[in-house]
View 1 (cartoon, helix red, strand yellow):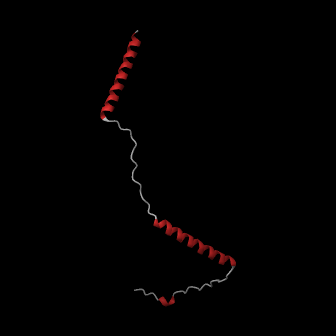
View 2 (cartoon, rainbow, N blue to C red):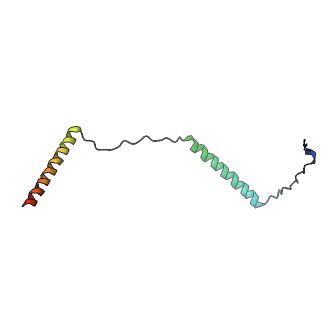
View 3 (cartoon, one colour):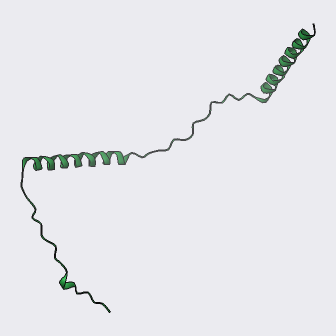
Length: 93
């Protein structure tokens, strides 16, 4: 059975953080804070509006009543019959 001794593990080296307060660092922090404020206000405004899914738009399809449709078909058939008859007579002469 192996036993691990936790007391002998290597310790992490402590890093020194530079706390140099340069004008660039201060300006970057100010810009970051301002940007965060703007984003927070925009999110609060956008979050209040709900995204509605619109209903399907009705189709503007021209629908004829049954009698008008039948009359139109009959007129077209009559026209086609006359046209074919003229073609037949014209070819025979």
